[in-house]
Length: 173
Image (cartoon, rainbow, N blue to C red):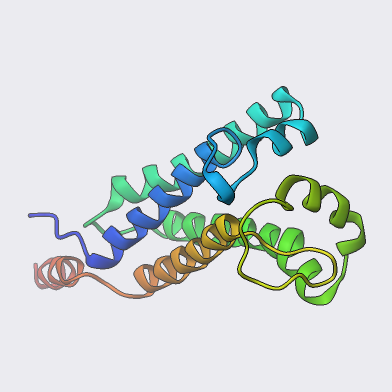
């Protein structure tokens, strides 16, 4: 049987690829006004940056590996759950670290100085609220993460034509 890779799976791989790229370059490669590598290095030790980068890259590689292994095939329930739960955990971290302090002020006072030091000179199109603002690069990452969660939910609750054909032919035999 020929693998039929769905557009949703290709979009998910593209989203994971962007997140992988983001995790590698955000703290290490100068991207003009989109990041401030010098400020990041002044705030975090080299060992902290290496550790955070390896953990973040490792997480995305696991998600990408699972996706690539099962693209065009039927996803086992444990893979569906892993892809959903893992990303939701990352998204909860994003909400706690960025959006709840930004929108509602909860925890913002502890983050203002550090965020302004690391991200104060980076590009942002949102207004400052509660002393902080998500910069454009992080905003793109957060939107991509949300997009990937929605796509994984779609993939998890729909079947490809291949899976339906396989199920029909299997039940007839």
